[in-house]
Image (cartoon, rainbow, N blue to C red):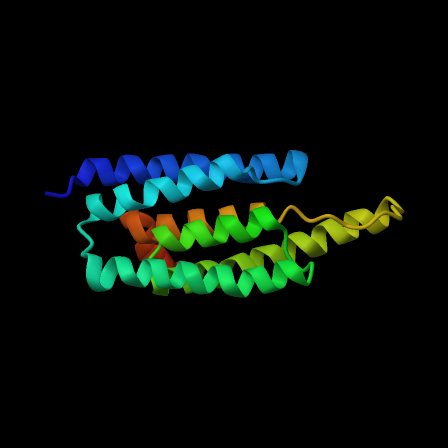
Length: 166
């Protein structure tokens, strides 16, 4: 029998891992492999705690993660994304339902765009000549935390779905 409290404990651990990923990406421009591995290792426990069936629920999660890895590996090969970002998004696809994962990608793109513009302006104002390095793990983690809050926190999900009006 799935355990409701255990599921929320796992989601809390995921939220802490996302904050840690954002923090390390800011400090070192790196998301550690052990962190991505820990997030991936927690996914089967989350599936069990959520009562997901192997077919089709878990199959969808694994399929979306595999598709995410393939697409983002191409972007990594083109040097458009960092390896840690690719791995973080791939392991998040194991946790987040496909429709919510699309919302995560949209939110990540918007947050990442704002972050890039802000850091680019800061870079120009400081007259830096080196290549701009954007800690995209911040955008990924922020969007993932937003999606998790919208999906699992009742007060937040009502405001998110109604556009904040109410």
